[in-house]
Amino acid sequence: MQIVISGASGLIGSCLVRELPGLDPSVHCVKLVRRPAGAATAPDEIPWDPGQGRLESDRLEGADVVLHLAGASIAGRRWSARYKDEILHSRVAGTQTLTQALAGLRQPPRLFLTASAVGYYGNRSPEESVDEESRPGEGFLSRVCRAWETAADPARDAGIRVVHLRFGMVLSPAGGALARLLPVFRLGLGGRIGDGRQPVPWIALDEIPLIVRHLIGTAAVDGPVNAVAPDVPDNAGWTQTLARVLRRPAALPVPTFALRLLFGEMADEALLGGARVRPRRLLESGYSFRWPDLEPALRDMLSVSR
Image (cartoon, rainbow, N blue to C red; front, side):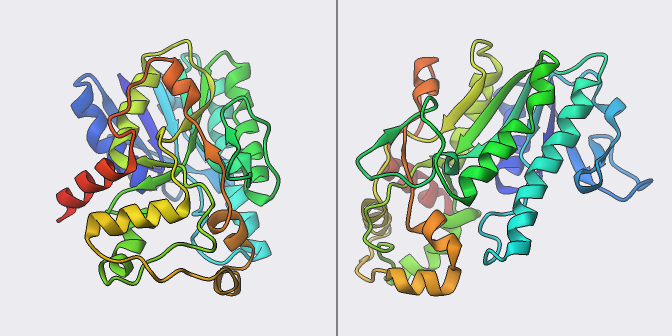
């Protein structure tokens, strides 16, 4: 089984390239890589330039699955108007380039798995639960997710099964939010963000290859799939759990005004708000989580990292 992966050098992509062949020996991963026109590539690489709409589409012939993860980091820097345009363009243009190429193949893949995010649901009341049937939210991240998912329509129109993986916070000591927080919490300087009531949907990094394998083998599932664990703590509970696993206090809350001063608009959308997102479609399709609860997941990944 040939699986083509964009964003293969990122946190999620590199994990999939490493782990999927171990879950299924028939899997061969091919990476979409950004290269100038005419540049040499390895046999397991396909060059593309999503910003310019350039892709050697004939190299995609015969792929069984295409997994699209590429896009500018949401938390890469403060959200200026220019960086917000980059976040949106990197997702929409890349997805359009890829899906238009897939739609024109003689042998298109049977599945197009594309990243999205729980930002689709916007900021909700902490008491409200949402799932894949819930309406979209408001704000920049929700608009990005809606445009990102719509950009996959050419693949769906060509008869390819399309699944939008709406990721929560991906937890790994190797990268992402957890890696940035660990030094602070290990010094005993961690604490809740704002009032701590905002939900924190999350997923362990090593759960994602298992979810991908499940979705490849479950042909009845298409459309949005929430890639989050069933256990959704609020921010105060999340930080207390991390502190308990590290055997450190978490008594230094980060005030709302400081976050807004440092991060501007991003603070309200990505740090001070959230939604209680449930993985209804995964559970209903028979998926059994390896890490359904936060504390065992943190204990495992942090014991391995040490």
